[in-house]
Length: 394
Ligand code: ATP
Ligand code: MG
Image (cartoon, protein in one colour):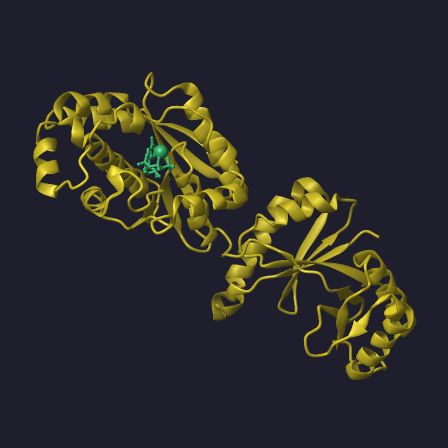
């Protein structure tokens, strides 16, 4: 039995009042775009629900896999459709459905019939009792029983011009549909944290761009490819991500040659933030995202974060800030970035890292060091931005 229809459950966007239609429209649009390669589907809103109906053969697992990547979807229910909803046909459909879905019939259930078509001659209450009875007749010896208070399975039957039977909910990713909450630019490096941070902000409905600071020959072409690959994985959830690749070597060397080495990482990050902010302004992004997490490295002490943050005029979101490394790793495994993140390619931050970096920088101290870059950094900064390479990751 192939499921022709899927019922899509979405929780949070249901609570947005008038905006609800905007949210639903964006969600439907995202679903249509993602489903297109997998067959002929209609995605439609009906009675405050979203349905996917297939008009061609499709691979069930592929389609579920894709839907599980679309933010805004809380649950996916495969629906068995009864074309002519007579009592006999509904019963036959229900039995087929239970046969397919429950190899082991040892569970408790409750019927939940909704009759949207009031022309249907039997009331919902009576239908609950009768359909429940039909199942018990067939399967009680195999262990099936009714529990109206805490059933293990709630078997839904909705009767309209057709009848829909469903009980299974495949969990979706939750969150809000991308495109409902503005746009951010994420500082994307090849590590574990920043792809997770990018995913987390996209999950709140934010469209993402990304920037990667590339420092050849200190960072290789393969390091760049790794960042692209990570961006592509995140794009499966976030939608297409425009990646800005900034050639950062000259800026980095200028800092290296002119500033105290124990402050390099802090000063470098401040320039990354300045550039990210410029890119944000140019590309209509309202905020910056990083993978920083308190205490992970010397540049992520509260002192360092504060001094780095000082250059930003727009909000900087750090969704990993309070997470333990293991929690970030767990999430990266779940979203599929972990294996790529741990490939051993160098990062420009590690290439230039000092043996004993400052952990308690002050703004005064760092600004004083940056004074030494006056007249040197400006043209390099401009050139780096002008020479950006742009790729759209999808
Ligand atoms: P990640 O695992 O994300 O690489 P990290 O633990 O290695 O982070 P840092 O290297 O200190 O930490 O970087 C902190 C954050 O700064 C990163 O999460 C990322 O958002 C940003 N960042 C660092 N290096 C780069 C880079 N080369 N290009 C873009 N962003 C970067
Ligand atoms: Mg890193």
